[in-house]
Image (cartoon, rainbow, N blue to C red):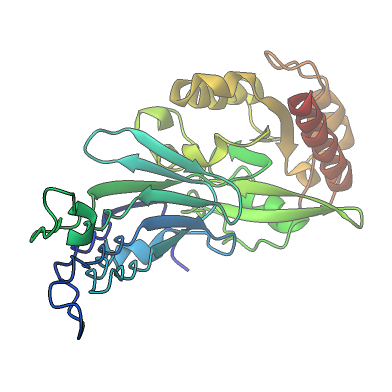
Length: 336
């Protein structure tokens, strides 16, 4: 399935139905009073989050959504039927913005959330509503109120506990495929990953967390270079950032600084996220080299970097439990 994380659509709620003008006409009541009913309400535009959706692809093909108008009022004071609402399904993690004002309207994060984006117009009152002692036979009724129209932008931000960041070919896709059921494309050339991948990592029998892998970053990504700028939003919501650096890099500390700088330039809040630093592809270096690497000191990082190998499985179980503990520590802090 093609991954799409931006979409613009035009939505219009339904107009209210008009009120009705009529008078009672019964056999022994030749001059009955007004009995026109009220018009029905127009249909709402309702957004519903669907946890089974992972892309905004559907909105590339359907860009206009219009609810029906309410039914007109009827005689005998019968109100017209309300028009059905239009429900638009979106993935969890969808931001909704007003295109004209750039205002953030809603941030739909939880499964099965319902959000009324536009309310339908109220039905007009029938002539029976306007009868007074001085005007006992009104011959007019209200038209229904018109619905509202808006162009909206949907912006999808994946919701994951852990976000993987690194240069192209740092081993992000190999890692997520090794510890989850995700199967991203893997090859020995840059920018193999062209779209974000989301995987569920099992920890023990009943524990799991979600991990997002985005296309590799390069220096200048926050200024639009490479592919990363298009997908950095997908690690904004994560609880933990995992920096992946190749173990045979000649400048691992500088690589880390470059990655962190790009994230912070994109969103300053990234500087304060929990993080883990991994030195990947540990199967190609000696034990002595691993010892030296684990003693490296990284700015704003008080732990030792972990050497892993997604090929041999070295330290992968340890990594999963470390991530599980960090995620839960953060969740417990949020609850306090």
